[in-house]
Image (cartoon, rainbow, N blue to C red; front, side, top):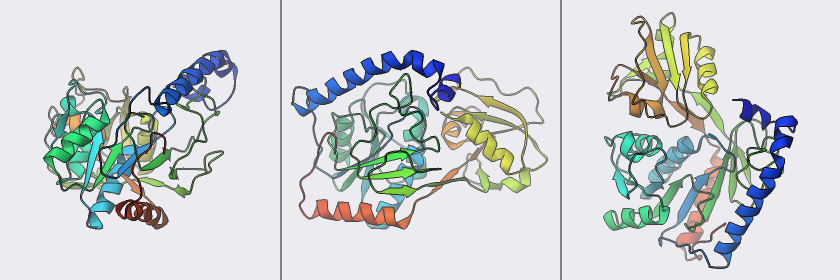
Length: 335
């Protein structure tokens, strides 16, 4: 996208938008001040809250990190629950997300989390604290709440903040709309996970995040199809994510024949999308898109995105959660 390219430098487009970024920054600072003064209210659900978010517009890989955190916490013997806004859903209420919940009703990312983490309760609501309270009412043995996205959702108090960056880092370092930043950086967080180079001006403990495409695709029923077996098959690749070209590039790097690449807006619902007319082409997509495509096109193949997180990050997280369980005070708006 033109704007995303402009955000990587301080050229004419970014400079033309810079006055608007000053206004954006002033409004964001005023909002934070209202929360700190107690004029705008925040709340804590009463269990340790871990927020996985980012400070840049667009995708940074928060949901795969959330899934990895949930799997780690369960392996430790904890009982995590996940909350989210459910971006892109057609509903506005607070509701649980089941592995077979339609993405249109709960959001594509919560639907993917519920599918990837069976047995872990997932709830969505506009106000995350409402989702957390509903989750705890239904699953009172939950001992950790993981919030997928929400660094800027100050109505939810949190105990641990994890900021995820893609390989573009902080871009030109300016706030929206002149740059990619949703809020000034650096800002206090407990840990940074990053792809590519270490983001500029990072002061928190930082850990390199390895993102890679799985060597297989999955079918609707969970069967694995080795990507190597698809070499020579013409594929129609579709991606409705923040950075679709990354997905296409990963497929090409596997030696796959992409007869067509279709980039759609992030969280696209696929309601009006038509299957390619060329029947020789096999449909391949991201896992996030598959939860919306499979009800209509059950033959689609989804390629998982795998993330590798250093053990040192999990050691830091475990130490922080142990401290909270031993009686450290819960909650702050900005950590």
